[in-house]
Amino acid sequence: LLPEDIEALWLAANAHRRTGQIDAALTALETLAERTPQDARVYRDMGLIYLHALRDPQRARQLFHHSLRLLQKESLQFRNTLGSVKNP
Image (cartoon, rainbow, N blue to C red; front, side):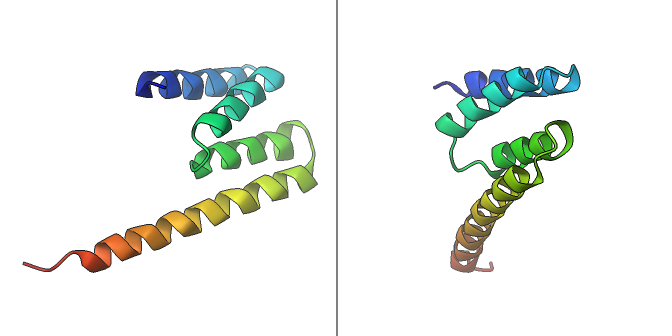
């Protein structure tokens, strides 16, 4: 998958969400989740749709928790990388 394909999916998801095409927005985000499963933003954005547009706080909470787990993992990886960088 090319980076521009990922960007196109993000643009489509945001455009659909802004115009109230919630099903299309979720379809684009679900495709992003399949192709970039470590991207916490995908699950955050799906959670926001479930919370505000679909009024499903339980599903939103699940998605937000998944997003936070991914962010914690990314933060740990970053700290480990930072720890290996020596000061000049």
